[in-house]
Length: 125
Image (cartoon, rainbow, N blue to C red):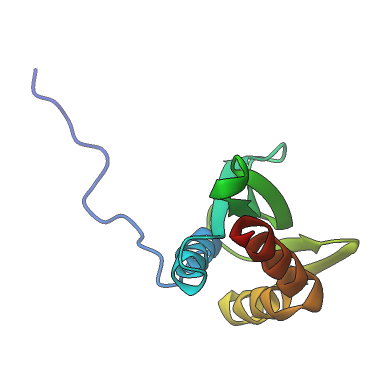
C-alpha cells in the first residue's frame, strides 16, 4: 500500500513579522549597544489559553546573570492581536505597527532606561 500525502504542498507562510520575531530582533541589538554589559532575553512558553506568553528580560551577565523583567505579552500563534503588560499597564496591540510602536515606547520609557543605566553602572564598578 502506497503512503498517501494528505498534507498538500501549500503551507500558509505569515506575511507579517510575528511578535516573537520583533522581540528577538530587538533583544539582539541591546548587546551591541551596551558592549555586552547588558543583554536582553526573550523567554517564550505556552500560555494557559493555548497561545503563547513571552517575557522580555534585561540580563546582566557580570551580575550572575541577574534578570529583570521589563514587560510580557500574550499572543496567538497567528500573531495578532497582542496583549502587552508593562508594570501595572495593560494594552492590546491589534497589528504589527501598533505592537512595534508600543514596544518602542516601553524601551524608551524612563523606567527602562534607568534600569539599563543602573545595571551598566553596577557591572562597571
